[in-house]
Image (cartoon, rainbow, N blue to C red; front, side):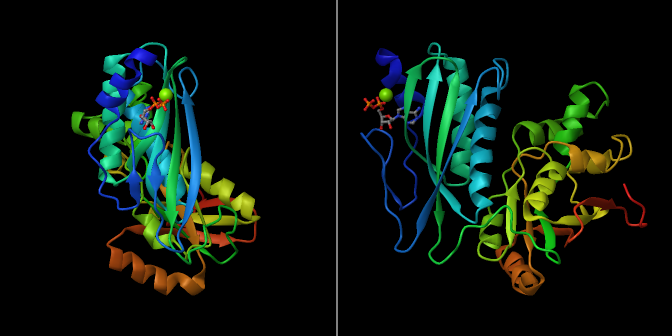
Length: 312
Ligand code: ADP
Ligand code: MG
């Protein structure tokens, strides 16, 4: 796409310079340059999405970009690191202004909100796809968190709210009619999920394990526990619900929507009992909301318990 490549970069991917002092050189130079504070380390991570696979032609391009960046950023956060910069390799069959406009806006909005800088990339002609390389800063002295190190007796927490995206899926499938306001909330949660990035500052160096939710809370939590060789009991009614599901819980079929609906960008993690007090203090100090939902146990498998003691 030689002739128009520079136009595309200039028009859609050259943003106002990031205020991040780590970024020395960004878009426009032959290579980007990132300066790390003494003792800090970078966690690098790559995500690729392709048309017909991870997204479809008719999908809202802003949402496609938002979800790509949100997912990449939260995965770094789940390692206890702060996402600071990313590169983007974009391939398109032909310059496509409406799609590029939507994609770059979705990307820039989220990047700006969380101060993650776009520092470079490549733009080529080919099947519609994007590759995003995330660079996340691990503070000096902090070890990256594992997604397989939960131990029996640890407390299980989540960051985020659950169920609204699942409600949108039910609505889109025609299984449920929602009032306008709640439909908007639900669709927003599905298409533009708010990534739980500030939680990284709370869990770094304290949690025993953490996982970014990419599918559903139930699936990703089960994966974390299985990889750790443990199981858990979850107090279902402690789950923080999105506002739309909260208002429609009975009609939507109850708590299953929160457990088994999509929850991209939310976070689940485990905290050893010995670290609980420090952890709760840090949550309060940072003004974050993390919710305790259950305990890690030696018995494999997940047990979902309601307040009255019955199993879900
Ligand atoms: P080169 O001529 O060396 O191949 P490019 O033309 O690919 O360089 O890119 C010019 C500049 O624009 C580089 O700084 C590159 O990192 C940046 N860039 C290219 N494509 C993108 C993109 N999709 N998003 C962000 N930056 C990009
Ligand atoms: Mg190029």
